[in-house]
Amino acid sequence: MHEGDELRFPTEVPAEVADLVWEIEQTLQRSAKQLQRSRTAIGNLAHELKRPLQNLRWLSEHHHGEHSAELKLLYDQLQTLVIRELRRASISGTPTPGKRFQPNVDLPVLKTLLNRQHSRNVSLTLNVPDGAMPYDRDDMLELIGNLLDNAWRFAHTDIRLSIIQSSDQWILTVEDDGPGLAKDEYDVLSQRGVTRDESGSDHQGLGLHICQEVVASYSGRWSFQRSTLGGLAVRVELPVRQ
Image 1: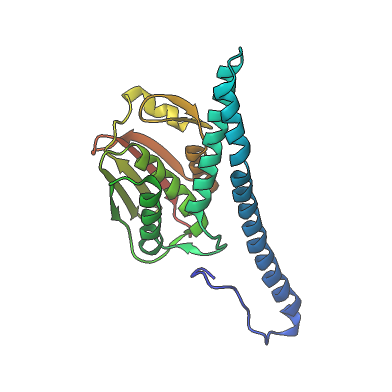
Image 2: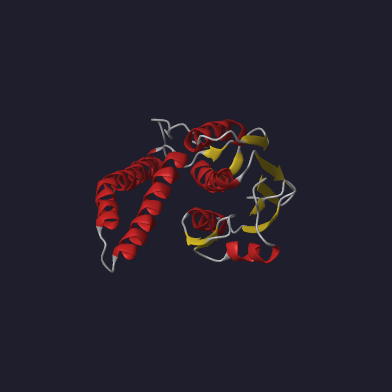
């Protein structure tokens, strides 16, 4: 199951645990199907919102009353949320509950996807281990995918991702060569629900908030600092599971 295969117990099991084995199989299968339906529904909703948003944009552009600026602001906010949710769904891909994250297998696919989405000539350097990490693949794709997506938005030409294991934790670092932030602004990124893009304009967003939720779910921690490349460096520390 950790390798991504469907969990199937042997058909011949002791009668004393047969009912338990069947319940475990059914529960895992239902969980995978429910997760798939949930993500499909969210993606469908985001697609369905495109047409009403287009109408809202038309109204904001042709409405010259006192609320025209408010209409335009409302459109921009909703459009940002829809684009982020669609991008999040594409990054996460097909859910595979229980499968472990394999950096050298999963990250090249993610790199190709982000290159296609952003249509920019950005170089991503990977320094990752072989084999699987003791964390859920879907969680890691959301975490690393959103961090890389953020780096792609602001990098000039270079992004670095490294994953290192120490005795008691895994350390993930994402760096870019973008404009970065002022020294006193890095703490702002740690506040719940608030992001600050590297061009200096504050905005409410989902990307870093999602990352924060994943890090917290593993009792990890993260920090922000200036990268040796010149832009932003995000360091995530996840405790090793015994």
